[in-house]
Length: 329
Image 1 (cartoon, rainbow, N blue to C red):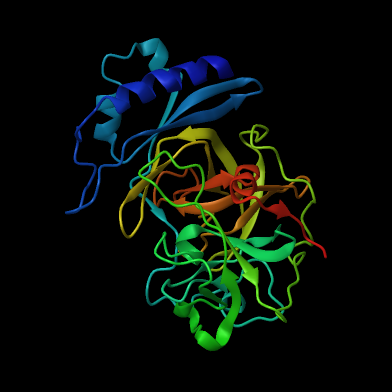
Image 2 (tube, rainbow, N blue to C red):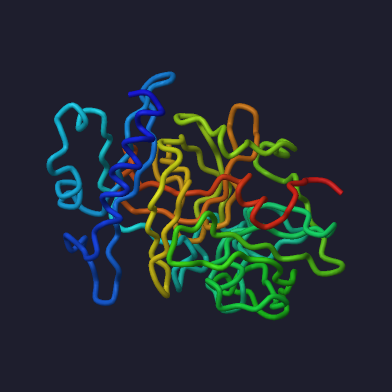
């Protein structure tokens, strides 16, 4: 179907879900866990043609959602069971997981390294931005700000505690972070201003520096090939499988938070990301243009195996944070 038709259908089904006051199926819930509502986006088919991407925790959820929908509409829907989506901080006890060079203490700082608030296990230093004229490290709220539990001015460690980081490994001071709400959220992001004397190499991505111009949030093409470097899985390649994904329900340690306007990615030849890769900056392979900020993923649902990854358009992240992308100076 045409893009505008898919957007209209997305709004219709999204409104239908919004009217459900209680869970319709269990969705594999553990005690105290919230129900994962379906998420809706646009999946590529051909130039100018898309299907409505429907992402659900269980096949039963899809059956309930599509009950009464015509066969013609069903033919235009790309349904995937992806299971629960979780924030990708490192699980406890994963210190030493390869690639080891990203999990050790490294100076100068560079993208892809283990980093975290002292009360968090470990995530990824995605890249460097300018905030108020000062250089700052970019990652996720749940990595740098402990999912809203931290206070601006707190220390940031490299490596993160799961990789042996201690107070002696302080490299930055927590700055701005938009708080997580029940939803919809636009980003899971935070910045930490580098401490005096802490050196950084902003262009040290695999293959060299990224482009200076961030891809506009409305100009992310489905099916484009992308890359990232993260603390746990290192340098990986993937492709965008859906854009404008609304209703992505992500399980955090405290609660489920819902996100709109997200990008979905699957790995090429395996998983694109894993726990500990949260905060990675994703770039477009063709021109190395910065594209998105990784924050969550699932264990199943990717056509290549390894689940799917969710990321926020980097242009949106920078706008919300009041930050400027920059790799020099």
